[in-house]
Image (cartoon, rainbow, N blue to C red; front, side, top):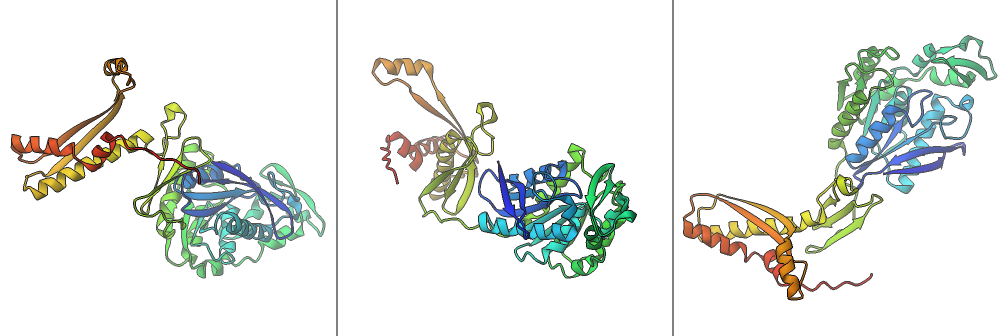
Length: 398
């Protein structure tokens, strides 16, 4: 689920971005910084953001000043301004969703998140993808820097025309990234490809060696600098989503539901619901075939699960109390409507006969009498009794 957002940077320039929201409860918040001259729509930014959202991490990807849908001129942008934009993004998230715990940067965006981390207290983990150790590394990509004076000058970057100024050159120079990495005090993940022809693998080694533990390095074998290959981008996203989990801590706090109560809350998705029960939270959904996202059990799956779990629990308790050698129980259930029975019921004014089929497998050296005893007990489980007693459902509006 994507939410388009706009927020001001320190200079009052409106920046544009998208927040990829989890289908259910938000566990943490992240910011993704795109590569130099790229936008938030790049392959890497989009795929990583989607993968993190699937893991419960709301992720903002936005365009730096003068790029994509953000306002301002690229000529007025530079490395320090990008860092300021990241801080502005973190401030916006803190006021609207939650303070970011993760910073992810691609290429020069990776250098920017290293610089921004110490200015964002909520950050617990930093991830770099194909990042240069020194921001000045970007200068070798620019043709025409020798002609840049006090005024803005048109240059070529990757074959594309851009207008930059002296501030840009001065901003990338003299950035002490080694000192920043040394005092980072956050978990660091470095992702890089040995075949990256734009930012060499030696940059990853320099970043890794300058940082203190906890730190990790993962090679993106065969990936290009921009992660244009779908499989490589998806792999990087999967690695990041798995790696950040230990550093996130518990999920963001939610209003407690009293024991014995269940709360179901809708989401922006068509069928996805958040179910909170006795300190547990999970998703309910519908299959892809009927327009759902298949992110959780269906309502009837949950109904059958209630009957099945109650049946198994009851059998185990009674077997233990009566010294029946039951070592395991498996209950398979199905919901259906039997047409023939339905027709017969219609004659008596009670059509639409619902059938819950339950098949129980008992494990252990049970006698036939003990097996029959377990069959009788199955029909006495509390949920079974509730369903057969035709409970009255009382509904009111809050």
